[in-house]
Amino acid sequence: MRKCEFGVLLICGAVLLSGCSLLDQDKGVLELPPNPQSFEQIYEEDTGDTTISVSGRTYSYFGTVKDSFSNDSIRECLGYVDDDKNMRVYTLYDDPYDNYIMVRYINGIMEQPQFLRAVDTRMKDVFTPSYIESLGYECWGSSGLHYEMPAAYVRFVCNCENVKFIDYEVSINGEFAFTGETGYPSHKPVDKGEIFDLEINEWEAGDKAEKDEPFDVVITFVIIDPDDNTHEVEGSYEREMMFGATLVGLEIREENGKYYLYEDV
Image (cartoon, rainbow, N blue to C red; front, side, top):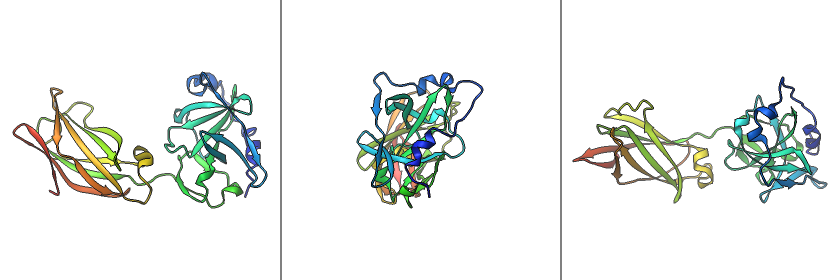
């Protein structure tokens, strides 16, 4: 096992050379914000950790890039470390829980990103973007990571004609979670009797649903016809479910120009 204090040294190594400056290519996403924060690295003698505190959470060095990393995965730059404006701190689109932050040294030649993990996730199995690889620091012990949690699905039948899109809104445990739409990019009408799977995944659920625990879901629907008129579907779908489950028996029907939800059909 490696000691956590080695993480600081690793930032200064593993240099990735490129034929041109990646800083110029991705200046927008990599540059500092207008009012960047300055973060201090602190060496914890008791644990051997080198930590950074960000937004009330403490992070310690965990890993590096597994195979490759795209700057498209960067959500935002928060600031820099130890008064060095080239050593920057980033959050990640692929980590909705902010269990990780990325530190990257930028100075013409780009260095390999280093990922720090929130210390409150020790001894826990947390979702981890697929491009993060643990470096086996001793301080992380048997802390787990998983790269994918099976999504939950609600399968429904559109038993209507003249439907271009079906919009839906999903709430989880009493809180708005996300919206979505089914249909065809070509605007081809949905066939009567066509079956759709509405996916509820870990990213969309965010912190509203706990792993391996049931959560309450409420779904409402809106029909969009070929003339772009909207029609609310009367009723809502309310169920308790878990990640990995698929619920069936839901149908949208049209009766006398109105749309209704039918369950357990």
